Length: 115
Image 1 (cartoon, rainbow, N blue to C red):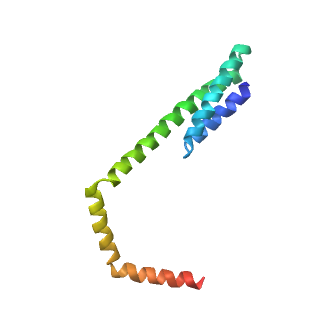
Image 2: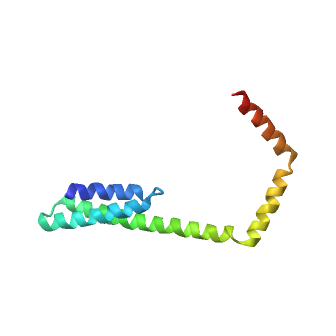
């Protein structure tokens, strides 16, 4: 069980840097449980390493997951802001009226049709 805890801790640390950090939280918690059970049964360095990596992975995954949730919430709040929507619409109108953009898009379209 100590090796499993160590592996789950390492997986938890790795998953904390991915969009599925919530799975890292689950893996870390399972790793903590396995490491604690192993340390009660037969204390070893592997079990301690599993406990440490699982705790680090769980905390890191939770912090980064929370940061992502807060970023998405802030982004949604900003996008829903009427001042942002008006400014975005004005910039979009400027860009779509740009003759260079139309020419570039036509050239790109021709190149894509050739392939």
